[in-house]
Length: 64
Image (tube, rainbow, N blue to C red):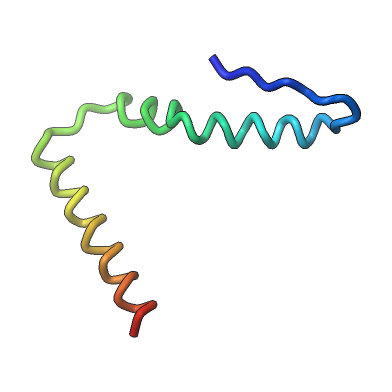
């Protein structure tokens, strides 16, 4: 459970922003989306490899 203490004089917008940031860090939404449809292990592994290749390519572009 995520608890956000609203400080004295803090606007509701700032508190909501802190809540959203904490919620995003927990990964609840990502987990929920991944559980909506079953994905075979081979497909999941393939996606991880594709993502790694993509990140490596992005990394090389910034260093060149």
